[in-house]
Image (cartoon, rainbow, N blue to C red; front, side):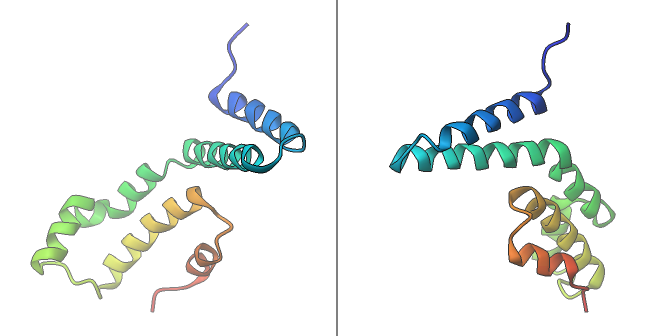
Length: 114
């Protein structure tokens, strides 16, 4: 018999917190909700791997460090559509993990770069 996966462990704790939430009040109920939201973020991060998504988006521009240096010293133009698209994709990857229900995330995801 193998051990549970990290995802299964997270889901078990989330289920426990959801069941316990009704019995809790005040500060303890608030902290249980924060814990459940934290586990949701961890689960999404494990599934979506935003670091890799961001690195992939910024790779054509030399990666995050190189792009920052190029923007700082004027070798890259922040108005360049390729720069904006790469940064946008990296930000979207992080927002999708943080809270995909954010209205700002939804608007940015649906909007084209002009």
